[in-house]
Image (cartoon, rainbow, N blue to C red; front, side, top):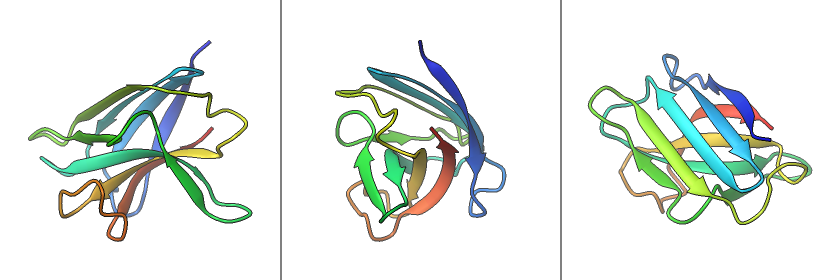
Length: 112
């Protein structure tokens, strides 16, 4: 019983779009219109009562886009995100380091 989510672009990535297919044990993201040859990571996020996030799947939660700005991400999940997390987010790491959490730029997001 996988669910499909349409990913919305952030203002920093106006031409981006994609879909996320998520079930209790797997996450699969297909994205287009992102920055070319860039590093992105995927997160489950809650904004309230305070912002919290966990990587979606297994470390390093990352994918690299191709020369056209397309990227795919597919990982197993250790637990269901439904009921625990409010949204799924794809973020850009401008310096190419997926561990650099200080300079992330939001790219795509969808409520779960």
